[in-house]
Amino acid sequence: MWAWIINAFRVAAPGAIGYFINDIGDAVDKFIPEGWRDKIRGKDGGLAWWFIALLFLMLGGVVMVVLKLVSKGGKRGKMFSILLGLGAAFSFYYGAGEAGFILGTALVTLTTGAGVVTSQNMNFVPERIWFSAGTQLTGIKVSVQEDGTVFDSSADGLTHIGVNRIIGQVTNAYVITLATGLMKNKNVLLEFTNSAAQTPIIYYDSDSTPKNVGNDIPLYLQMMKVPLLIGGNDFTDFATLSLPSLAAGDSITILYKDGTIQANMSRADLQMIQGFKQTVVNTPIYMVDNLDQNIKSVTVNCLAAQTGFLQRAVASVSRGVVAGQLG
Image (cartoon, rainbow, N blue to C red; front, side, top):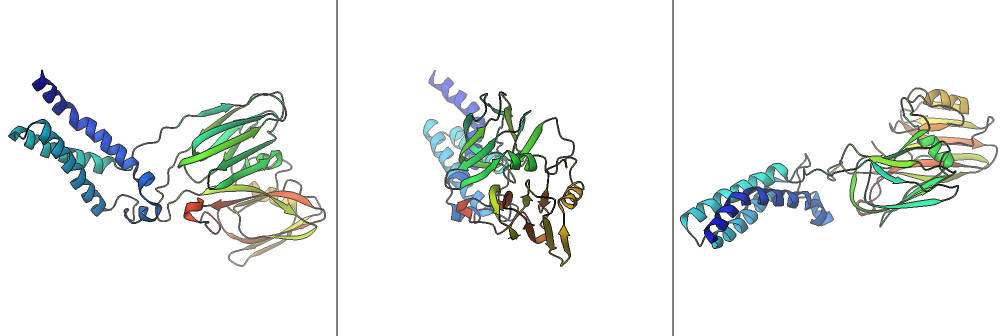
């Protein structure tokens, strides 16, 4: 019986240990200190050759010792240990850090009723959330432990940003971009405030996972409310600037990075420019789109105080703030 168990273990061990080692590779970024993550990776984001070699030696040695003890040191056990160690090492090499992150689609169904808040916790920040609601939600707030509030918007902001760069809007649907890619290992609280007797479903998706090394790090597309006072209001550090209360007599001046100045623009001008990049430009969609990072500054001259919504690209607090943006 014992011999049968040993042989079964020998047959099953390579695959089992291979999967286990892949899990180690996927967990490297979680357990390696922040300051070392860039050091153990190459320019392409993969693990550095010396780190892989070190893991080969360590993991192969552990496997050899275990199987040597199990096989009582016989020649077959030693040979199998060597082959298993090599197989496990190659399994790690081709799988380390590349294990997939399985996502769902539907996140939560909102509780019906105006002003009713539905909360949801997640252990990652998805790239986008989206929903379809006959009456725009009163607000959405996304908070991340240690990083603070990364998205905070009322209905006006959701209507603006929810259709930005959308080519063909699904009826009453709004797409909210939270980050430039999937941000794993985050303690996240999402709060959705309903606006009517409706039960919209919140969905989420991500189609990219930055390697979190060098310039390939995930960034929040942080959204916040900004006050605009009577007179000139200057903005220099943003990805989008939404102005839902912009009046017909207000004006906007844009200074581009190449020195070009577009002065005294009206809200109708903003709508026309938005039409270059999206199909939904209905009133009051007045937005300055700087996702391409070609704008140096914007001055908004207001005849009355109002509230705008600004988005900017921001890194996790542990990585520091990225000055500006996506470029």
